[in-house]
Length: 196
Image (cartoon, rainbow, N blue to C red):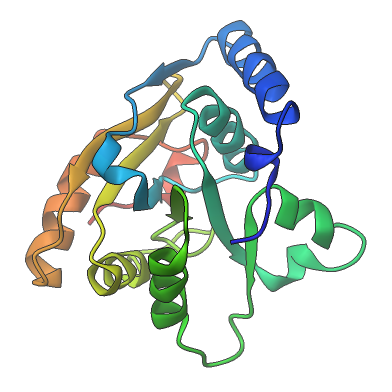
C-alpha cells in the first residue's frame, strides 16, 4: 500500500490533534475503537449520501488512529488533485471498465505488511440507491478478514466504529443482518439512503 497522510510521521500526529478538536467544536461524538484482530479489515462506510462524508471520515480516522484506504471513482483522481487524493488514502477505480476489483483488493490486503483498513461504501455512490453492492463483502470473504461496521449519523452527530462482523459466506443472510444494523443511522441526505 502507498504512503498516506495517516502514515506520514509528525503530520499524522498533528492532524490527529486538529481532528479531535474540530470534531469536538462541531459537536460530533466519536464512538468505538479498532480491536487488535481488525488491524487488517474491510470497513463498511454507510450511509454515504454527501461529499461531506469524506472529510468527516478522515477526521474520524485520525481520531481513532486508523490506517485507512478508500476506493473512489477515477474522475476525482485526475490532475491536479490525483496526488492529494492518493495521499489521503484514495485508490482510484474506473467503473466503466470490467476488472476484478474484489480479487485485487483482497490480494493487496493480504500482502500489506502493516495495519490497513479498506473503506468501501456499499451504495457505491452518493446518489440514491435501492440495492447495496456486495464488493466489500466479497473482499472480506476472499481476504479472510473481518468487516468493521463503521457509521456516520448526521442528526445525532455520531461517527465511529460498530461491531465486527465475520462473514459466513451466505451473502443473503449476512447482508440482511448488516442492513438491520444500519437501519438506525441517517446520512446527511437521509432520503438517499436505504437499508432495505
